[in-house]
Length: 457
Image 1 (cartoon, rainbow, N blue to C red):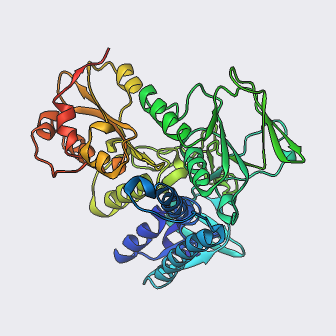
Image 2 (cartoon, one colour):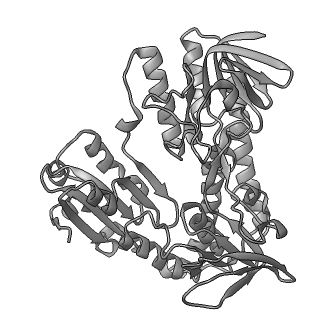
Image 3 (tube, rainbow, N blue to C red):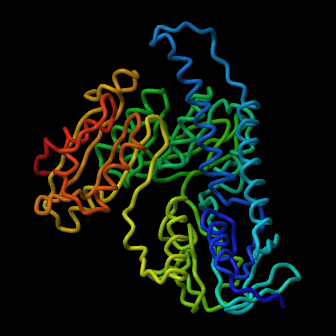
């Protein structure tokens, strides 16, 4: 048995940084990876999808060139070159990460499937490793729901989409939330006909209704068909590809396409870890239960990243690493609950979201002031010819602290960070309102919006 001070299972966003920091503190560390180094974000999440989105944006902007007084010829998308660009970026990043890990002093890299045999012992193939502390960073995978007919048709997920080097003639996207919408717009811009099929009454139903409606309008304006309230989805193979039967209030009872993408959430990669052998509890969905310091039900065993159900983003996984490392090495008392929710939807224009939604603020009993501004009022958006979307903010009427915000528009994923800084600093909105911003930018209109707050009805 090989003995270490720490074992890290998985090389997603939290694992490598934690390995480096523990090793620098003098610990002997083992890190285990069963597949591609870098986890979801690097291999089939953030890095490749945003690379593809950049290519789709270039095609979209080229088609709009005449709007800017620029004449170009017919726009053609070479998906093999698009994919090759994406693949090269992913491969380079993954190889650099692996090389860095293998070169770290005090760190040993194992490749294979990890499984607990008891609370302090993990097997990797024929190897048996033990450590005083173990950190689980195994991420998640696409959910394939048990829909009628789903096992009888060829389908794509966000992972298998990474291998597509052609433009599907008609892509059916099952799921109208964050992942599904990014792929829907991306492939529409590549040249596919696209239909989104969503069971809920509106897209991205977690968002406020006005934000959800604005996203709907943005996608519909690009001739993306949207079928809502599809409450009885069933798939079947047909000569043209795949037919999806739906039960919608409006529209035909079925939609036929050449390819189907399932974008209906994710599940944690915890089923093969042997967690029961280690006394590690999970919830009904398989997510590992953790406390405020990310420790599991087994002493000195921690779960970080997507597998703990406390965040589903690269940035939350990295923050998990920071919490654990600071608490262990610096005697800090950091907690997951100190984290303010913040995330983006990387459609074009993007959505930057921070803090509470209207529904959440109401449930918590706040007296709410709200400010709202269409992007048509933002000079930078008009100058760029990208005026879709809106920005809105929620403020506590008593304390004047910012409760949440959504910026759906050009630069929204960047502009929202000035608000999260104010929220972490517990600053009243007047501090942001009275600050001077650069003109012309999107952020300069945030103080104006805060100066026009009204009670939320």
